[in-house]
Amino acid sequence: MQGSVRIQMKATPDQIWALVSDVTKIGLYSPETFEAEWLDGATGPAVDVRFRGHVKRNGRGPTYWANCYITECEPGSIFEFGVGEPGKALNTWRYEITPTDAGSEVTESFQLTQTAAMRVYWALLGWARGKTNERGMLQTLERIKAEVEAPSA
Image 1 (spheres, one colour):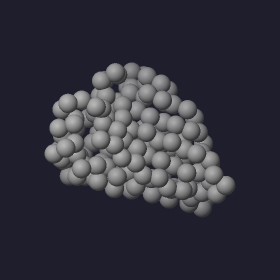
Image 2 (cartoon, one colour):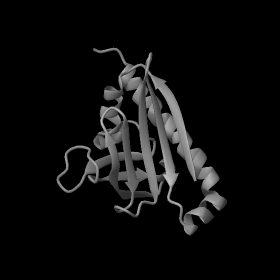
Image 3 (cartoon, rainbow, N blue to C red):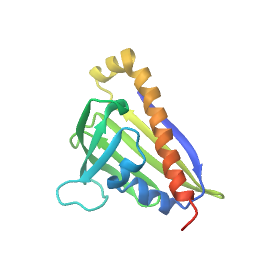
Image 4 (cartoon, rainbow, N blue to C red):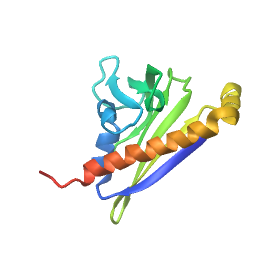
């Protein structure tokens, strides 16, 4: 009930973290979440800050807003959020950024909450959704990589 992808980027952890933690930029990278906005007057990331993402499931639909809240936020290192209400996440998304000699290693992952309903879902359809999520995460990270590695104008 989880999956992850990892790629190398020729950029500092702080450069990458600035992009993944600014939810208002997600539409530039994600194949499913085409926009997001901070909630409750927030203007940036911090633990317990809420935002909502506008999602087009599988890039086709249905289209809906999903409320999210930040569960871990370490500049230059980790950005994690739950989808749903605080303490009741259906899914948790995480970015981990590790410095390397050539720049950074970036891992994006998801983990579904371990409920009976989610276990049934995963057994029946989750394997397909997991593959879709992994393709989407790879596309997201590749788009971020293209931005951080682009020559400055």
